[in-house]
Length: 172
Image 1 (tube, one colour):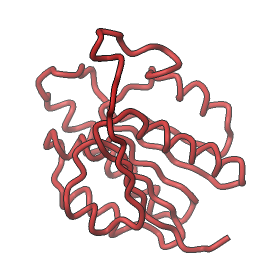
Image 2 (image 1 turned 90 degrees about the vertical axis):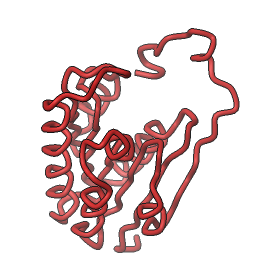
Image 3 (image 1 turned 30 degrees about the vertical axis):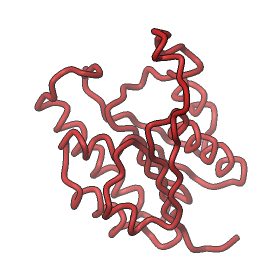
Image 4 (image 1 turned 180 degrees about the vertical axis):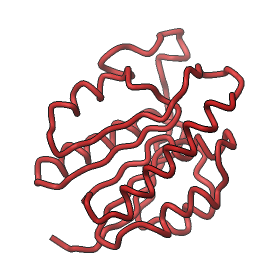
């Protein structure tokens, strides 16, 4: 395997960004890589937490307070996000993980939980052999310029617009 790690960005308004990242987590784990997943704006109540707990080489942490979509940003949201970014930087710089996923990092920037510069610092400290995946809507120019791979998920149709809520095992 090439020992150089690359930076992936999965962005866009379509469904599938986290799912694509988790597919890569599964593949990396199956290949014997250690994996760290950090999720912004989420709590450990998503089904992937239960599934990934079964994989010994995968560590997943959620950096979300009690925030709900549309609720105002709290000081606790900011504190959790900044703590999460520091944990991600430790994981990405350590050389211990073959794959690090920063799930919803781009949304955390959009909500001003930390700055674009803070987010880019994750790329600055990344160990050269660590593959880094960044997900979320609202990819900003600086992250797009520095990524090695950018995939945009485009929504064509989504049943959410018909009032279907997030379903356990499918969207959460």
